[in-house]
Amino acid sequence: MKVPLLDLQGQYNNLKDEIIKEMIEICDSQRFILGPKVEKLEKEIAEYCQSNYSCGVTSGSDALIIALMVENIGYGDEVITTPFTFFATVGAIVRVGAKPVFADIDPETFNIDPKSIEAKITDKTKAIIPVHLFGQSADMDPIMEIAKKHNLIVIEDACQAIGSEYKGKRVGSIGDYGAFSFFPSKNLGCFGDGGIVTTNDEEKAKLLKVFRNHGQSGTYIHDYVGGNFRLDALQAAILSIKLRELDSWSVARQKNAAEYREIFAKYPAVLEKIKLPVEADYEHRHIYNQFCILVADGKRDELKQFLLDNEVGCAVYYPLSLHLQNCFKDLGGKVGDCPVSEKVSQEILALPIYPESTTEQREYVVAKINEFFTK
Ligand SMILES: *Cc1c(COP(=O)(O)O)cnc(C)c1O
Image 1 (tube, protein in one colour):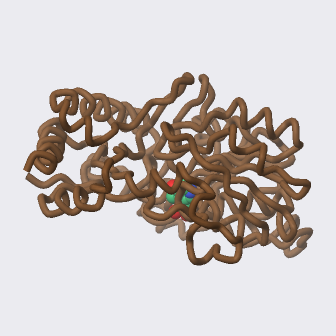
Image 2 (cartoon, rainbow, N blue to C red):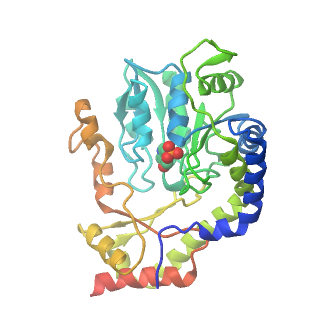
């Protein structure tokens, strides 16, 4: 048996005819940049994310960058974020010229630990970027409270978490901005790169659209230096079609996660060697972009290789805590600064969880993990 980490063929085949028809229509129109397809998607995503406004952009990375640019965050400013995230979260902060400051993560949810934030605040701090990692929301109430107390902007990195909820609210609608990615491997992916920013604030929404188009407020009249962050019509049309299926895919991912727990429960000896992902104790909706286990006793890399040798897809998100990356050497991060993030990065392993994966495949994955520990 083969179990890929992700297989997009199933969802593509189901929607292929409709998508191709839309793509031909757009090609025939020869209108590719922004336009009615992008506006339609922006309405749909704003509604889906319970936000008043949204602004389609070129990627999740650019969604983060443009939110920082609209807030005029740059040289001399500090932004607090998690060291355990995809690189782009921190890359965005550095690219606008600001300094990332790392607050350690919660060992259960792998999200930024609100208790570690306040000690990192200085008079230069301008914003907090919590990440809703693997599809589970960060603990937003205390984060928003800290932000309010210190007058900080909150940009939710929701790139892995579209449709995820925190205490009944969709992620991306809680902070000042939500940043989403439509990279193909995200729960809602397009046929290339794409992203969107959500906000509830009318003024911020207007500025996002100005910054998205080189800071242009009228034709060739520039009030700001923005960039080319425009989403294209082909991607928007594909996303509008796929958005209708998103909830069914998220439900399938939740079901697959529950089934993993049932199957693993039959192997108590394995559960002494690994830890299943923990669901946060606050009310939430986890959309399982990833299902990540922790592997104890320094066995993670060996287990990963064993699974790959047995044609079980798996991956390490992420192997090196960001405060220890070479490119951030100048920030002076060192081993021991974020001990939880450092430990988790050495133990984490993502297993296949995509919606169309089967019970037989999950049984095979767990049987192989059992074989690894009993061989
Ligand atoms: C994917 C991702 C991004 C970047 O999105 P792109 O569309 O690939 O630029 C940012 N943050 C997180 C947490 C992500 O998972």
